[in-house]
Length: 246
Figure: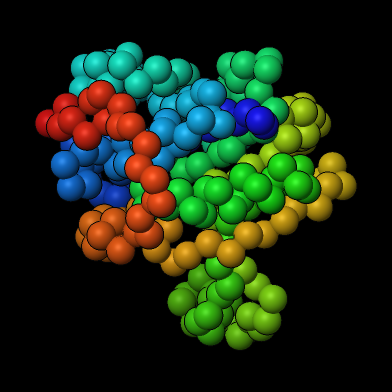
């Protein structure tokens, strides 16, 4: 059986979330924190052997006060992030166990992920070496100038919105980060493409939304109720649904 490590970046500044008390991965969504919803979907899988959460150094003390018990019982590795997201993922990659075959990177602020979508993107990665979830863009796209006037309408044919998890052979992702230059990459898939590897896009769902604003948090509360139910419920981890975020 192929083995997976899952990296959950949660070290961003959450500047668009506008909450002075909580960053978006750590705020309550229902009865538990956003990042716990995301982590729980991976922790209950037999093929996931390691989960790594990336936090900002400035959040370490507060995070461990609120979630230290969760982390200990659930067996999650916590690493500190760097100045940029790429620095953070690189720090986490250094902690991935040597025996791991594939690495999945999933936004800690993307809690509405279903087991069947994880199955699909994991299977595609095993087949091709690199796969991500995505959804076709359905709305009309506009390129907008600095003064908020439309510059152009962007054709949406064959345009997809990338989601996570993004899943890659471990050796490919390690090589991609080792060779990454200072040219910005918007996601890990772009780094893999720079090596010359094709990346498979697996149809996801608009339900798999990323929380960026308070409005997204309200949408996520409803989206959780609409998630496809797993065929077989696995055992839940102790503290996975606890309210230690309070």
